Length: 254
Image (spheres, one colour):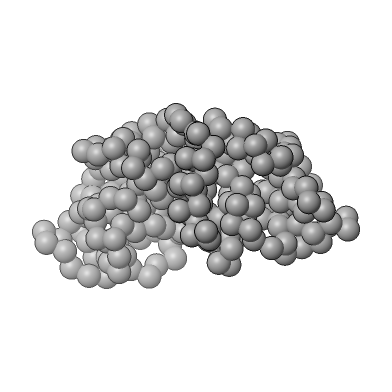
């Protein structure tokens, strides 16, 4: 069984996981005789490691420059490598390992994508998550509420919301005015312009410039953001800024 979603569902069922999955990660690891250590490794660039020591497996989660939600996702991601029977890609100290940096976990190789899909379904099971987001507008209140409920990062939570919503919506992540990533709902695929920076004279650009987020959604001419016309020609945008890091998240919907 190598389908990541099916495998995650099997783990949840076979391990008898109830309630919030993030609270059962250590129990799942122990049930497979996987040793684990969640600690600060400030001199290392990786977020997570799966070590192959003979028949034994060890998971390391690097908490440096991270938060509990991100750590939970990393732990689940490494469990994904284990349950999907992925092979080592590095050798460290004479032991074969799977080493995952932040860039790796963002995606790229098929094994990393698979481990991500496993982690998403394990931590935010679709059937339960759909019910919890049903009928709620896509905004920062929803992202904040569900990220706390499921004990995941706002980044992971927003991606899950985008993946399940039926309405046209895009969530953009930026560092300063530079766009570093985005996720689009199925109804919004192909609409966003190919841009590397936040468009000038948008609420997002202004919020990042003053390092102060928007209180609510504001209208914007769609040609600032979109490559294709939409009925009414208006996009609604709202941005939250993390003052210390300069990173921001912008929600676009129409």
